[in-house]
Image 1 (cartoon, rainbow, N blue to C red):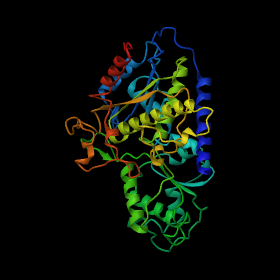
Image 2: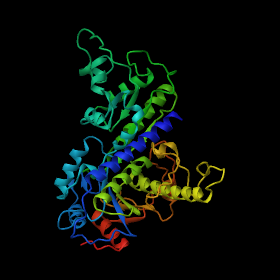
Image 3: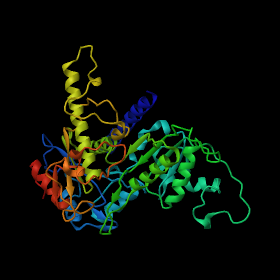
Image 4: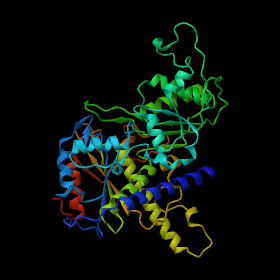
Length: 446
């Protein structure tokens, strides 16, 4: 119960900060804009890798798409947020990079990285945390609110006898003394590291010693200290013709090693990033913030999530749509039973599968009854990244998506539901996706 209360408190703080930032930065709507923002108001969630870029190369359709999304003054016609499972940089850096590539202004408030929701996990912010990944992971952790951060490099320097797979890294002459560190309280996995063998070894050491890697291993240390992982993508698309290993593959290795050594399953305190619900809840807050900056007075009714990965982008958007439907059902139940003694939140929502803790990823487990939640989230699959029409076809029967191939690229802790990998729409590229959305909503694009 303490963990649930902490998450709810963190979520409310996050929500308040987003709404406060929107009010401070709110600018009056441009007088040249005559776009409707009434009954058909909507927002766009863009994946980046495989949708806008392949590695460092811009996908040609993306630039024209964004030229159409801004007016003559460079202001966005609708709320736009970039939702990526990447997490090896700061939001400011990613925003500057996108601005340069797309030739439109992208603010950090429009960028959501896989680790962004960690701001709400305030119960861990004062703990000593070990962070794994690449890029400025220590700076990222501090920016998210973590105060006592230990990197993998700092850990191996403090305990020089732990990292010995690479013979060149082994102590050459005398055995150096250990420096000793404060015990590790939790592990934060930001993304795939550069030296997998080093990270896997030291993370296992920390988990099997209750955060004291200079001690002897003990499988009695179970459950282990908390592990929070960002980005579950098994594969992602760069310039190569075939997908590359993502952080999800690293997690598979870590889970397998832990299970092999201890006989127990590695447990996660939270799984963050697409396809978890908490990621889309956070993205919806950013969309709301962008709508306020545009001067919209009515809530965004529909979100369109554009992605290239069926197991991350499409699965996540559809899962969030289920969450929204459950929220509406809960609200209706609460209104119908107002004044009664029964607790409607304790009841199962009809026709909507109950979210698992892994799928929620830290989002409130009791569906909200807020007035301004979107009515739905629609998923759009593009063919410029992980998914390609040339390489694979989406069966018309959702039950055949994975059962025939017996391949599930989702995370171990997510339930297999083939229907969640079925997109609302399939288009060739991001330009076609945006044109289709505007046509669906009856809005002029040019």
